[in-house]
Length: 69
Image (cartoon, rainbow, N blue to C red; front, side, top):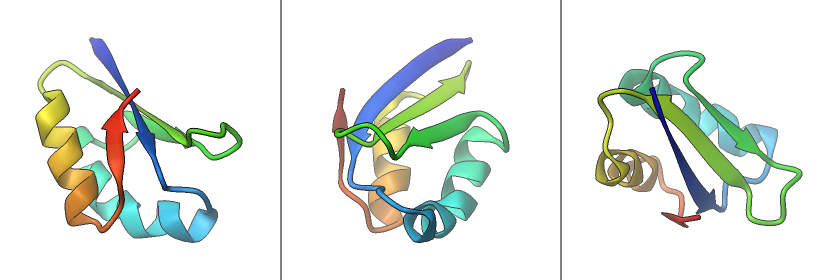
């Protein structure tokens, strides 16, 4: 498993709820989390198959900003 980390603007429970369907579909339930207490709102994704580009596209599709951490 590889771990990918990104800075995002996913900063509250409502934001997490909005991005959950997209990330669950792409990464799988339980394979991602957002640290909303971090100033950079770090999204961590654990996957063998996803690329960083796929994660970026999924988060942007859900309407959020994302950049490499």
